[in-house]
Image (cartoon, rainbow, N blue to C red; front, side):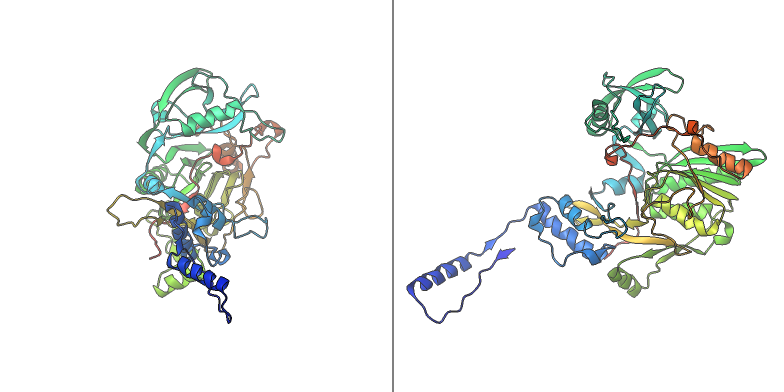
Amino acid sequence: MKVKFLKIRIGIVCPFIFLLLVLLNSCKKDEVTLVLTQEQKWNSEVFTAMQSIYLWNDALPTTLDPAKYSTTEKALEYLTGLKINPTTGKAIDHYSFLDKIGNLSGEITQGTASGDYGFMVTPGYNESQQVSFFVNYVYKNSPAGLAGVVRSQEIVSINGSTAVHPEVDNQGYLVSTSAGYTNMVNALFTSTSASFGFKRSNGTTFTTSLSVGAYSINTVLCDSVFTVGTKKVGYMVFNQFLGASSQTELTNTINKFQDSGVKYLIVDLRYNGGGSVETCEKFSSMLAPVSANAKMMYTYKMNTALTEYYTAKNENFSTNFTKTNTFEPTELYFIVSGSTASASELLINNLLPYYSGKLFLIGGTTYGKPCGFWSTPIGYTEKQTTTKEGYDLYAVSFETVNANNEGGYYAGMTPGSTKYNGVAAYDSYYLDWGNVNDLCLAQAINHISGGAFKVPSSLQKAKQVLATPSNSIDRQFKGMIDFRKHMK
């Protein structure tokens, strides 16, 4: 940016004014150029990209001063805070983000992870009514999985310290300054190695030292077949929509259910934060009834400029079901929670019109993300051969609606509400996958068996702990990304 001086037209010249003009002309010869940092240059790139692809670009300013923001994250935070949800009075976009080049896209498309232990935790009350952290999921090929860590295990020590019980305030929220909280966050997210003590469900304990590592991600964490009366029930835990690896796992699991004569399907998405739109489409087609083949699955909604752009290219905004199997459940049950987001919600929304009265949600209100991204390079080009610097920008670029034009679930999907059949149920974090005493799984089995959900008694309600800030504990990616479309 150059600082330019105003030219003054005068009718009478006095020595003082003459001297002033000489000084002004001297300054003009050496115009001042503001030197932008690399980050500030990327601020301009983010703004330019969002003017084209951002779903809510109508709220963006006409210009952006890149020097006003010291980091690209701060510039993005400003831009995403401009579109206000009239219902809540708050910014509608708490989804868009920046990612270091290739980190997320590599994990989703290649099905690999690195730099962590491979397990996640959730806070909850133990048998002694102390607040503890429990393992809520583990990837079997990860350092934690190979060390014998499984869902439901309670963490009883970290690096030899038993200060693992975070404090909770009188509203039920974790106190983020308490030792039990900071010890867990530091060991799990900021350390490259740590020693953890785990308590198994049978009461025995073990201690293991873990180091972060690279590993392949298994996204189907459990699959089982139950017999409920004369009915065959399939139960599967699906944790992340990755690329080809997830598609293979899903195909194998659904084939297993079909071969076993499964007619009632329970899909556990309680920690599934989303991922690949393409994989969501394939899973949707696997679960859709045969009559849905070639019919609309969902359609995109974009900003005016993008809509005109793709219309001019004769792009089809809608995606149809492509049924490649004959698997057709009689009823579908989805176990969900506040961590169920984006591509998981898209899966449910895609199938709703084709399972009228036969699709049920069990658990808690979902995250609420009916929109998604494309990956946009910032600071580099995709075909660049030199060392790349910058980010992948994931700015909300599209919203989806199903064949009934239903979508817009920014407040989440609530089980048992007017719009979503089902029942509320707490997360049994203290039980392993597939345990029929799990409150969510038990509700599905009850309904399959007798056609109704049980009203939970006070004894069945697990006392809940609220984690805030949520992203300090829940680091699962929440989003849906379509890697197949790019704005040129």
